[in-house]
Structure formats: structure tokens, C-alpha cells
Length: 337
Image 1 (spheres, rainbow, N blue to C red):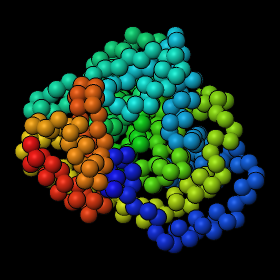
Image 2 (image 1 turned 45 degrees about the vertical axis):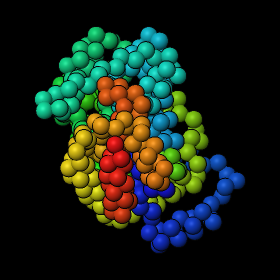
Image 3 (image 1 turned 180 degrees about the horizontal axis):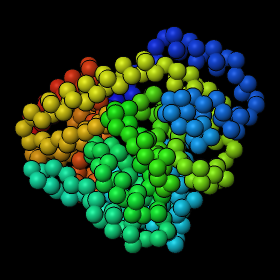
């Protein structure tokens, strides 16, 4: 099975790094609780992000951090403001915390492109005095970045915390890290699941101003990350040069897929700055395309009713041979009519 459905990094650590992880595993005291401050991991993240370790919160994936944010700033009297479609866990945890969601829809722009509902989000931010705003950049699954100029205006015109989810930062190369010290309501959310291939170990992190950090730290469970996950993440963060080479290959794969998908008749593909591409088919229902590819042992993501789009498909950029096989099988599926 070629697995291109979950925006994962398709490259495993090199053998030398695997050996180091194995040695670390053998020496680990599994019978002891983790260091609840995760000082080594936070120092490694601090070096990587150039942000103070004492203002970095690590979580069991970014999912746990989204939950903590909604526990801190959500609730029945507050509002969770975002767009649709976007990362589903914002709405999932809004429901779990009883936080009403204010969700704006994309619009169809000129030449069939997508327009982000900037003015609607700005208006919702002005109208609600309690709550939190989630902005995914690049957005999953559409792939485009948030406008920096618009984001600055939003931060200046609202006191609500604004979470910029940079889960795919390493593939876009664009960040708003430099704004963190200027705005007390900016929070940056990231993960090691994608770029560093740690999807199976669940390590996310959050960069924030002091007041936000303190509020979330009071809510965090003391042993929320396993000893192995925290230690493995620290080791992999040292292999930045290797992973940067992986990111370049993934970005090349993304551009290759976009170019080739754009050439196929009866298919609309949306440009992306993540490690994935959203596309739709005209002559054959997307769900049928998905099922036909699955029968050919190629797995991508399918939505039967994606907000604004309806049926839609998303493919993650894989290794070169995986990308080529996907395109070959997709071409055959589309020919079937």
C-alpha cells in the first residue's frame, strides 16, 4: 500500500540515527516517570526556534495543546473563531469544551481560485469580547498561507488570543515568529509529526507570551509526554541538516505533483505551501476515484462533504517513486470514465 493520506514525512531517520535512538531506548528508565518540566526537550526546541525555553509548552501532539487552549479561553460564554475547511481538531475540541464555533467559509475568487474570508474573521473578532481565533498557515487542506499584513491588523484590532498553527512551517518556509515579542495575544502552534517524522510519537509544541504560557501550564497534565517521545524528539532535533534535505525533496515532490496534476483533463488542483495538494475531479465522483485508487493499493484522503468544496481529495507528497505511481494509477482511473 502506498500511503499518501495523512501528510506524513515519508523518510525514516538514517541508520546511524536509528542506532542512536535504539541505544537511548535501551538505557531509558521506563519504570520512572518523565521529568515533568521536559527541560531537555524544551531546550532543544528553544535552540531550533530561537524562543526562550521557559515560554515553550510541549504537548502530546498539537492536539493536546489545542484542547488546553480551548479549556483556557473557550467555554459556553466564549467563541472559537476559524474558517471552514481547516484542521478538524479546532472544531472537535470546541464541541468537547462547549465552546460555540463561529466558522467562516472560503469564497470562490477570480479564475477559480480561493479567497480567504479575512473581513468576516476581522468582524467576528470585533464582535466577540471572549474567545479564541485559530488560523492554520498553510491551511490544511487548502494549502495557502495567511497574509502577514492582514494578520498584523487582526492582532492590533482584537484582544482575543490569535493562534497561528504552523504545523507545516518547514514546507512553506514562512513564519510569524518575529511577531511573537510584539503582540501579547499571538500564539504559535507547531508539531514534530510532519517535518521531523514523529507522527507515531506525538510531540507538539507551543510558543507564546508569558501570560499565555502560565495559564496553559496550570492546565497541563504533569506527565503529558512519555520519556521516550521527549528524548527521541530531542535527538531528532539535532539531525536538522538531514531533515532539511528531506524537506527539500518533499517540496520538490509537491511541485512535481502540482505540475503533473495540472496537466490532467477534468481535474482541478489547488496550489499549496504544505506537503499536500487538494484536488477535485469533474467527470468522475471523487469518492469513486478514491475507492479505485484504494483497490490499486494507493491510499489518499477523501472527503465526501468537505465544507465549501463538497467532495474533494488530498494527496500527500511522498517519495519520488510513490508520487510517480500515484500519478500513473490516477491517470488510469480517470480514463476508466
